[in-house]
Amino acid sequence: MKARGSSIRRNREESGCGLTEFAQRIGISASYLSRIERDQANPSPGVLRRIAEALQNESTVRAAIREITNSEDEGSDDEPAE
Image (cartoon, helix red, strand yellow):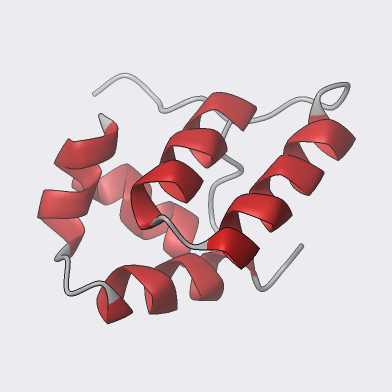
């Protein structure tokens, strides 16, 4: 799902939440969230779920759950240690 990052960014911005504030809310670093939004990181299913829940956007939640279901067997990038 290549457009996932731009969808996350758009929904986050529409919610009025800044990058740093949103990252803190979901428990990841702002730099990692930025990489997710630029489709440069493949977040784990747990991170996707936290993003979707924090956005409280039904279509984003459905898309994240669909992706979680499809990617549970595939590897994903957990947030790298800083």
